[in-house]
Structures are given as structure tokens and as C-alpha cells.
Image 1 (cartoon, one colour):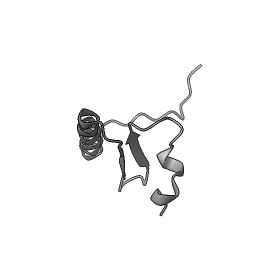
Image 2 (cartoon, rainbow, N blue to C red):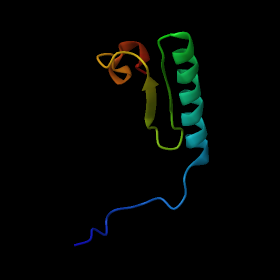
Image 3 (cartoon, helix red, strand yellow):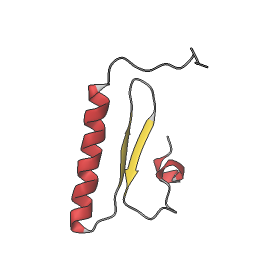
Image 4 (cartoon, helix red, strand yellow):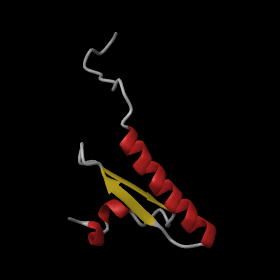
Length: 69
């Protein structure tokens, strides 16, 4: 049984991947010096929030009131 509603993009958004890579590099730099890190960006095309952290799992950047619009 196949689902014809499944959509797979034909291309990868290179700007989104570059932004994700930059956030990952910033986190790696924080890791090297033992600093806490919460970083991310909002995709201008989709409005999707991407976050990355090295903080304890109980700290969720998606629910942090300081990061709200």
C-alpha cells in the first residue's frame, strides 16, 4: 500500500543547511570551552524554528520565555 500524499523535496535548501552548520559550529566552540549554549534560527521560508543546545535536557529552548516572539 502506498501513500500518494507523501512529499519528498527534490532539492535540499542549501541556505538552511549552512545555517544549521553555523549553529553546530557555535555549539562545538561552546563545548570546547565548557560554556553553555542555546542557539538557533528561524527559517525565513518556512518559519520553522531550529534550535540546538548543550544544556541539560530539562532546559527546553522551545519553551524558554526569553526566546518568545
